[in-house]
Image 1 (cartoon, rainbow, N blue to C red):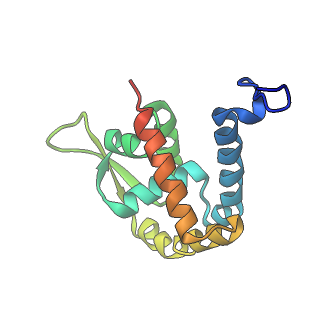
Image 2 (spheres, rainbow, N blue to C red):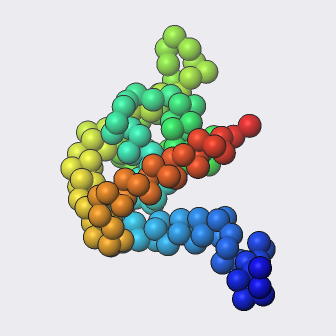
Length: 148
């Protein structure tokens, strides 16, 4: 191997962690102008996506689905409740469990959110097939790096 073809294993541009971190920040930044008119941050959008898919969800299950710790999720849910998008209520049969349900306003917001996936495809300049491939690869990375 010559010096010209040698690859430095510690070169910044060779690091998967660097590419993932930069790509994550940049993709999330592309969501911002689409979410702000809806009154949502990106983490709030993820919570709404989970609730649009299935509700009610316990706070614990919601945290698992969106990969957020309770200390991060709780204030986020409070803000969404103040905005009128959801309700939090203790279960009558188990007061330790806090369920989250959407309000009518929260359910109606889903219609506006339907414009986000195609807008993101356009912003990123990726085809459906490219996005599906990227999603599959990232999902595999997530599965290989599960929390202990």
